[in-house]
Length: 353
Ligand code: NAD
Image 1 (cartoon, helix red, strand yellow):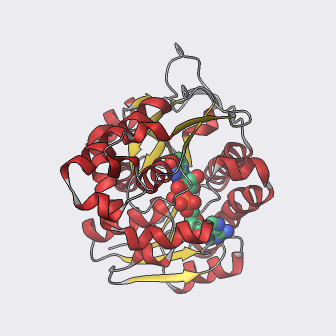
Image 2 (tube, helix red, strand yellow):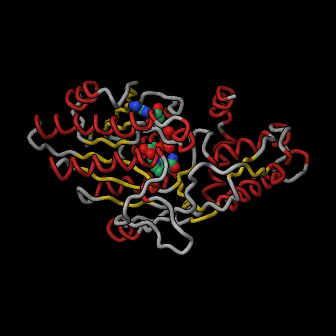
Image 3 (spheres, rainbow, N blue to C red):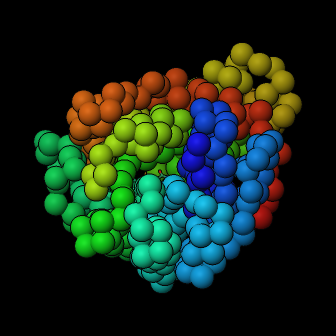
C-alpha cells in the first residue's frame, strides 16, 4: 500500500491520474495538493472516495514538507504546472515560478523528509514533463528519444526543461529516487477548454470560429490521457530509478487533420441524433451544414514549433507500454464525454467570456 501526494491533481491530467489510480489501487491513500489556479477544478475530483484535496502552492516548501512528513507520503506524482504555451508567451513569470521554483520546492521537501530525516526509507518522486523540451523537428527528422538533446523554444518548454534538469540533479547528487516521463499532446475528459481539442469541440457545438494557427500543418503526436495514465502507472511500478521515459500516443497528425476529424465527427453526431440540434442550435450542423465552415486561419503562434514526434521504444520494450486508442476512437470517446458533461464545461466557458 502506498501513500501518494499528487500535485496538480485537480487539473486535467492529474485528475485523470487520480481517477485511474483510485481504480487500479483502491487501497492506496491519495492527497491532492493543488493551488486551484484557473486550470484547477474541484469538480474534476467529484465522486472519488478517500481522496483528500489540500488547497496550496507547491512553492510553499513548509507546507509540502509537513504533508510528506506528517502524512507518511512515500510517493510524489508531480503534475502541477503552468501548462499553456500561449499564456507563457504573454506572461512567462508564472511559468518560471511554478514550473522551476515550485518543482525545486518539492524536491527540497522530498530530500529533507525522505533522505535527510528518513534515512533512505522507500520512496519515489515521479515528475511529469513534456516532449516540448526537445524543441522542434523537421519533417524527415527521427522522433524524439530519451537521448535527444534538450532545445526548448518557448518559455513554457524552457521552464519544464529547467524542472527536468533539477529532478535529474537531485537523483545524481543526492540519490533521490526519481523517475521522469516526457509525454506528447494529451486530450480527453476534464481538459480545460483553452487547449485545441476541447476548445474546438465546444466552439463547433456553439457555432464559434475554429481559429487555426498559421497553415495548420504543425504536427503533434496525440495521446489519449487514459493511455498516458497507464504509462505513468507502469513507470511508477516498474520503471528504473533515475530514468526518463517518453510516452506517446503513436498518432502523429498535422493540426488540420485533427480539426477536420473534429468537424467530421461533430457533423456525424448531429446527423445521428435529432436532439443535438435542440441542445446546440447555433452549430452549423444543427442546420444541416458542415462544421468545417467555422475553420478560420489566424496569425501563427510566435515561435511555433513545427513538429513533435515521440520514439516510445524504451517504455514499450522495458515496461510493455502500448497506447490502446487511435485518434478517431479517442476523439469519439472525448466528444461523448463533453456531450455528457455540459454542466462541467459550461461554467468554464462563461467565466472565460
Ligand atoms: P493543467 O494546466 O490542466 O493543470 C495544472 C494543475 O496544476 C491545475 O490544477 C493547477 O491548479 C495546478 N497548479 C498550478 N500551479 C500550481 C502551484 N503553484 N501549486 C499547486 N498547484 C498548481 O495541466 P495538465 O495539462 O493537466 O498538465 C499536467 C502536467 O503534464 C504538467 O506538468 C504539464 O507540463 C505536463 N504535460 C501536459 C501535456 C498536455 O498535453 N496537457 C503534455 C505534456 C506534458
